[in-house]
Image (cartoon, rainbow, N blue to C red; front, side):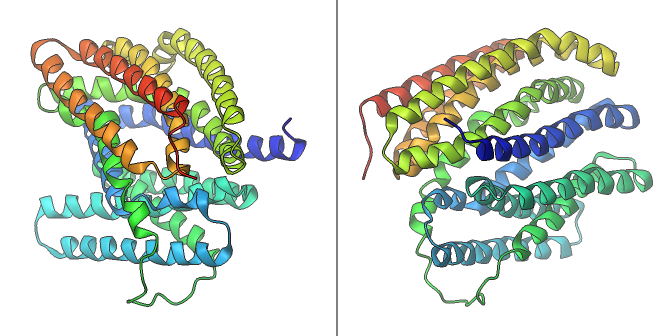
Length: 392
C-alpha cells in the first residue's frame, strides 16, 4: 500500500514533469511559425548529439546513486563526477577559442552536453531520495529559463542556433542551482576515483542505447531531405507526449524499485512492472487516437506526412518505456557488463536494419523494424531476470 505522503511526493514529481514536457511540445508550434521547415530538423539533430555528449561525460555515474547509503559516499561520488565535468567544460572552452564556425558549433554541442550530464545526475539523486520540493523549484526554473533564453535569442537571431543556445544556458543555470545545494569538500586533483570502475562499465551500454534509440535522425540525414527530417522531428515531438506520463511514472518507480531491490523483494518489483505496463498501454491508446487532432490544432499542414511516423513512434516509445523499467534490476545488481553486451548486440541489429530499411524501403519499415528489435530486448531482459541472475 502506498502511503499518502508517497502519493503526494509522486504527484509533485508528476506535475513538474508534465509541465516540462508540455511546454517543450507547445513551444514547437511557435518555432514552426518563425523558422523554416528545414531548420526544425536541424534542432532535432543538435539535441540528439547533445544527448550523446551528455552520455560520454556522464560516464554512467548516475547509476551509482541507487547504491549510496551515507552522506560521505555521496560527497565522494559527486566529487569524482564534478572533476570529470570540469574536463569536458575545459575542452569546450578550448573549442570556442578556435576561429572556425564548425568548431564553434561543436563547442556549443559539447558544453551543452556536459551540463546536461551534470543535470541528469542531480535529477536522478533528487528523485531517488524524494527531495521533491527542491526538485520542483529547480525544474520550474529550468522550464522558465529554457523558453525565456530561447525567446531572447530568437528575437535577435532568427535561426535554429538560437534555440540551442537557449537550452544550453538553461542547463548551465539549473545545474549551478542543483550543485550549490550541496556542501562539497575541496576538489583535490589527486583523489582516487573509487566509483569510476563500476560507473564506466555502464558507459558502453549508454552509448549503444543512444545508437539504438537516438541515432535515428542522424541515420535519416544520410538518406532523406531536410524537409523529410523535419516531418520526422515533429512526429517525434508529438509521440513524445506519451513520455510525459512514462517519465513521471518512472520517477516513482525508481524509488519503489530501490526499496524492493534492497529488500530483495524481486516478486514485488516484478508486480510493479506489470502494473506499469497496463498503465503505459492505456496511455498509448489515448495518444494514438489523439494524433490527428493534435496536428489539426497546431495547423501542421506542412508536416502532415509525419502522422504515420507519430503513430508508429508512439508504439515504439511504449516498448522502450517497458525495457527501461527492467534496467533498474541490472543497475542495482551490478550487471552493467551484461547490459552492455545485450545492448551491443541489439545496436548492431539496429544499425543493419536501419541502413537496409532506409536504403531499400522507407521510414515506416525502419520504425516497424525498431519495434521488433525492442520486443527482442524485453524478451531477453525477462529471461535473464526470471533465471535469477544477480550478485548479492
